[in-house]
Image 1 (cartoon, helix red, strand yellow):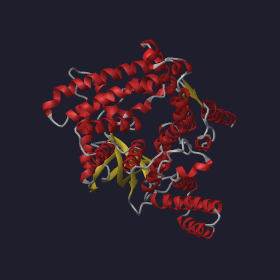
Image 2 (image 1 turned 180 degrees about the vertical axis):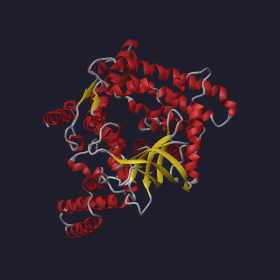
Image 3 (image 1 turned 90 degrees about the vertical axis):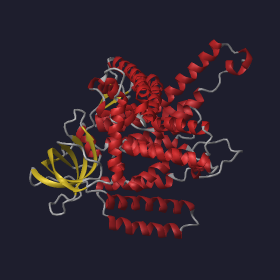
Length: 541
């Protein structure tokens, strides 16, 4: 991270200012290498050997910056491929020799069903003698959901995922699973989970029960609030979930930057009012947010948001500039180093490309669109009427929200179509209403969660839940009305599975190349044109 230059007004990424985001040199090669191994199952040995050759070329060509940079980029790709190969289960498709069996499985993540009957999740087979060692499997099991990290002996019917998975199977495949186990039963515990995992599961259950407590019975309102605060879309009522999905606003119920930024601001505000020292207060806030991320399942979007918040706070404490793109690249690199298999995760891909679109196009376009008009510049501050201020404020709010929503929609459309076969263009406009409204139940839910520390605060907590649930009911009603509009969704079945990832790579390159543009037409028009060309290619194929 570089110290800010007070004489330099440029803050965007340009080819000549690439050094202002050096983490891209780490994040992009790592991502390419992990994706290459996920797609072609490269061998770790040759990748490491060629990577060492790349290091030698970089050292010998240190007097030629272009040669050294290319050698380092290639080295990063090779090391990323080797790291992914060593850390992740095999990705190639395999047909089990028997359809029913007993398997020792390390549970990576378990989620109780909304009905309370059993649980679903992901796990890795740990039996070395069955030919399925290290295979990731999607689980559907009867009984009580275990804490993450438990190793269980599970009996059930096992089968391979379809060759070209669609819908839910496509999402499961994006998590790295190649097998599916249904009708499972827990035969016993081979190894217990850690105490921290058990504690996180207990706290999640306790918070869900607390958030569902309202002054009068309202199962849907409690479910909406619990889904908002815990990031579990499976808790949403079926009609509400369908409406949010059709309008492209289901992301509001994922723990992401919206949640982390709001909670960070609220906690820092409280710390400032209590006059706590800045450094200890910041560390305590980050620790509390990390515990919240772990309790809610540590989704890729929540981990990305927390890492970005940590790097931005660290830059401020160290009095160094930390551009948003630098923080995003550092978060990407850190995630891939910790969990290289995240490169194939749908949540990881959609979260990072959407934020990339916001940073490189949505935010700059919003700033250009909301510059003061001639009327604002020529009107003295003392002469401005309430009607003028309201009109100018509404204009800035609508234009900035529209730019940000358009950028996020353009960025994620190829991947969304590739994964789910549909994408919502109507979400560009629905987000203008629902995103600001979503901050209200989030703040109320935070206040209610603070009340959960004592049963003496049950009464104010219940009324806070009631107010949050009322706002969520209004948001659901708005989404359901908008979902009735014809052609709200765009449907396109991609015949070639590589088209979705290829479109994501294309949009990433376009957003990075036009990041220095100083006009809204270039910032948003370039990605829109690239998306139209991709849609034409996808339709022809």
